[in-house]
Length: 290
Image 1 (tube, rainbow, N blue to C red):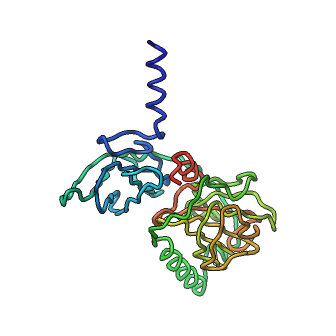
Image 2 (cartoon, rainbow, N blue to C red; image 1 turned 90 degrees about the vertical axis):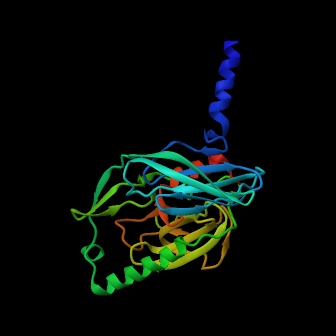
C-alpha cells in the first residue's frame, strides 16, 4: 500500500515538471527568478484567441505541436523586475463568450554576482559619433527582437553553442573601470580566436552585422519571439535572411566589439526581453515542445 502511494506521488510530481492551477492551466513553476523564463500551458477545447497578460505585457499562446487542444506561452521575466507576487491574466473566447482566468506567480531574487571589468575608455565614455552609432544599432536590434512570427523553427533538443568553460555567467553586475554600467546579458564561453560556433537550433538569421559593443554578431530568429545571439565573432558564415540548421557552424569566435579578450558571448531574447540563456535551454528541453 505504501509503495503504491509513493509511486503515485512520483508520477504526480513528474507530470511534465509543471504545477496544476485552475484545472486547465499549468505553470512550469510557481516561483521564477528575475531574468528567467517560465512556461504556461492552457488545455481547453474549442477556444479562440488565447492570450495572457503579465507585467503589462501581452503575450499570445501558440498551439502545442504535440498535444491536441493544448496551447503554450513562454513568458520572460525582466532582470529589473521587483521581487514579489504578480497576477497573470489568461483570456480566450469560448462559445462566443470571453473567458478570463487568473493565477499568481512569485518573482524571486536570482542572486546574481558582480564583477569589475577594465576596458579601453573609448568603449565606456563614448564620443558623440559612437553614441549615435550605438543608439541606431540598439533601436534596429530591438525592432528585430520585438517581432514575433507564428511559425516555430525549433526541432528536437536544443544544443549549446560551445562545450567549453564558462568564463562569465549570466546576470553579473558589470562595473566598467569602477563605474556601474549594466548587467551581463548573456553567458560567456572560453573560445580562442577561430573556434567554431554552432547554431543551437533551426532558425532564420535576422542580424548579421558588425556592431560597436557586440562586434561581429549573428542573431537567429527561432520563431514565436525567440532569438539566440552570438557576439564578438571573427567571422560570420551567414547573412540576413539565411536559414540555418541546428548544429551548423554560424561563424568563428573572436574579440571584436567591447571585449577584454577572445570569447563567445551567447545570449537569448524572448519577446524582446533578455533572459538567462542556459535556463531557457533547460526549460525548452525539459518540456519538449517540439
